[in-house]
Length: 529
Image 1: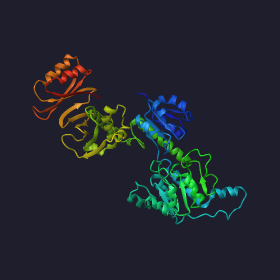
Image 2: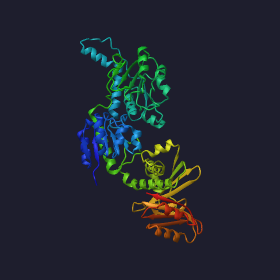
Image 3: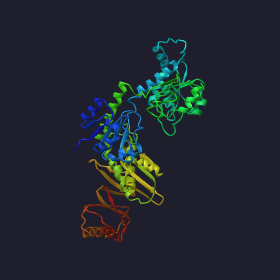
Image 4: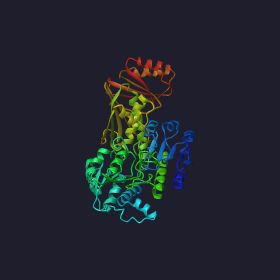
């Protein structure tokens, strides 16, 4: 088996490169390649993985050329330099390392808040200039002040913890912050307007999305108490910089500490030169410890994915741990093939997909199994859909997806059933994984029937009457197509029946026409897996 190949196109530590090598991965360390988009475009065709920082821009053009690429690993949090929709469309997993620089970024935010409160940068510059302007630099204490935290996730919660240690009162706005978690952190959960109305300092720790862009704008600043100070070490674009400038000029805002800007690198800016504005060049993650941590973490994550299929910190796919990957793999294959089976039988617009997990499989990572099932269902209609892009494609098409978990039922200890609904009819198929690790069909449309998934199969619905099997065998023999296996199921003698035939040759149009001409046959459909 050929070893996976990884390209490191930005600067990463030697220890990270060593992780790839120690895990049996061929790695090319070309830290300046990411700055040359033409050279990257030419080179990317050879690699299964791409490890980057912020310099490499992974555009749709790069992704289109990356025909072998399976994973992109970003050493750090921000993935503004990766076109995630384009990667998802191609089935490329995009990972980041959200925890490797959390402490460093949180400490920088606290440092910026302190520097702003005590005017340290201006006082430092003045003293170095030979001045002794002791009376000029009058600051404010942090003790007993109210800190408003917008975004109380990984970094925001660390900032809150440090601020509580400084005896500040911390209030937090985060739609995903539960009351229990707020209590554990020692913060008061409030609405966004309360942050603006009550805070002496406001710090932002939220991703940049359509909803959060300009979350601190002119209207928000007008709601703030006079003398508020703003700290942003998260993402440029969260704070409307024009509105902030005007609010500082009017003295409604006492000052700001900014590590990020809407346009970077920010070499000129209207806020630069104002003595009550502290600015740093996106240094939130710039410590030796953080740079090493994120590099090692992304190397481990990418190696795990390429070797075992484990998915960690992916932005466009459910996570699969290294421990659960081997156990999950046969069920991912089962879910995908069941989805493909029912998808190939569906030629009307799909409105609903119901995925039922019974027994032990319901305790597994069902998000990954659902993604695999949706990929199978939609491949017949969309062709290029994959496990990464399938949930997005289903949502875009208004397909309702439901997961159902239940205890063991029937003869099988665990199984997956997929039901596809249209405005006209519904189709369902169930399957399980046997002890040999191979996926099997166990039921179709409520009819018990056991079968492997063959590369080429013919699905036939018919009435259970004498003469059908003989007629079907004669047609295959006449057309020179060998039957590899034959599987039957029925509701009752003389009732509805299903036949699955695995064949060694192609099911041609003439063969299909002959099968559908058998009096007992209602439908015949070729399937491929």
